[in-house]
Image 1: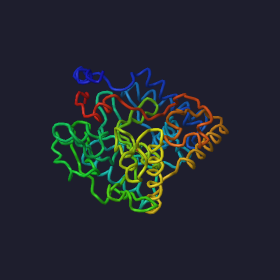
Image 2: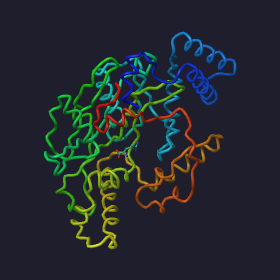
Image 3: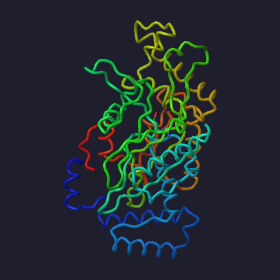
Image 4: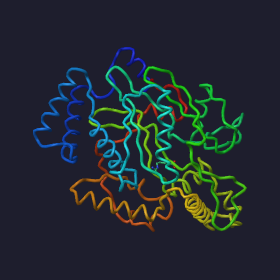
Length: 393
Ligand code: ARG
């Protein structure tokens, strides 16, 4: 599908929904905005705003959100993120409106400013930076990294042995093809940003070290993991999902919340196709690893998660635990329901990857509806993250 995009571009085909769908989606979003937001005004204001937007679409093929519409749309896209357990604070999202920015150099500088504002010395703040949207005959810019901060993954020549995070092997190789010389070759080399301005080729930008807060990982019971030299970055900032509001797609709109411990302690460090640390931890703990039935993997997982919580606490960096965050999510559901709003949620993502049944979110079901505005994955971004270059851009 994405392989067709260059051809589509040569033919001058438009990006995003056609004019009819755009008119419909715009009106739907404006109704939501006017219903929920104090700046929305009454029925007359709504009718005149819809008429103005429809006229703008007829004249230009697209329309421009007001600053208040953009901010509310971005917050509601978070509220509608069915996989996110951390939505209780959706309204606190800080929205950096950078819709006039579409060149890679300024985007790189803005991404760094975003990280500094979000990191806030360890008291992590949820932030989104919104760059230029797709327009009918002009694509918006892109950030091809999955997150603003990710660790490189290198495979050794001949394919034997790996260094770093295998999940990012594709974007690592891609950055190297673009001329990135590679990092020092540790398991935790911070990747450069790979940014493509609207009318440009992708280029790479090293992040300044002082913009990337990292937490050295140590176990509360002593130094038995210290020789592994583990660390993790403080801010999870998704960079390759499109923010879709009222039929307008903002393809570069990096956003972050704070981490929940299990994301790092169970998945990033524990998954077989990630850092795969359960065997190393089992050995260091002296566990009986002769059979799965000794539950050595389960015990290693718990110790990795204790390590993550302890280390972030010690460093003074915001990190939720899965018990607290599960409770907060139920509070969020109750609040939204009291406001008469539906909440979509994906059980398989909401339930934490360790100790699921010890949290209240396990013991119920959720409404799978996907509401809009929303953050969506576009296929070419997923291809790029895997290092495939057939992306049509
Ligand atoms: N699970 C991803 C990671 O481990 C981060 C996804 C976003 N997480 C968040 N807490 N906002 O890097």
